[in-house]
Length: 149
Image (cartoon, rainbow, N blue to C red; front, side):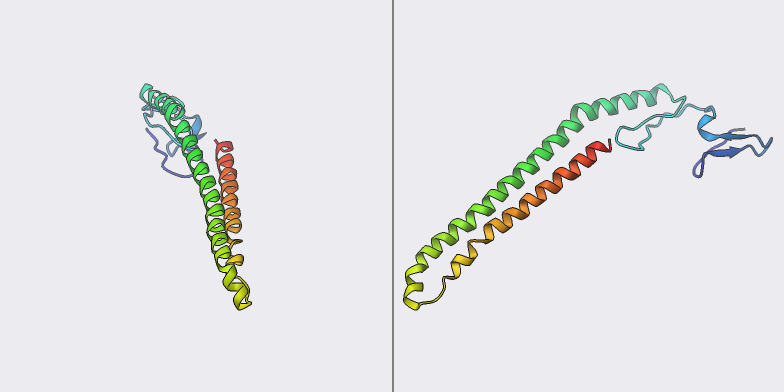
């Protein structure tokens, strides 16, 4: 009589003869043709069919040739994009507000008030610091993800 396991623990008992066994040690009546994913690489059952082994080999080759390089390329593009945005965020407000501060300086001297554009020059470094923080968090998460493989 065939037994099908669809959930629960690995310990089984035959209802006919009360024989106890572990599901993972039992021999398959019909070889499994599925590819199972418990982590990144996938695996096959004990006593699996040739079809499942072929799927596993194809999947791992595909991941190694296309998946991992694509993931690294995506991480590179994101990091370069964040670095470029950090540089732009640092430079643009500084240049714009320095020019405005210099242009407003004669008016400030006539009115004897403070120059409001001088305070805005500090926005660039604060935003750039935020972008650099995001980059470090991205690297941290990427390293953790690779270590979990």
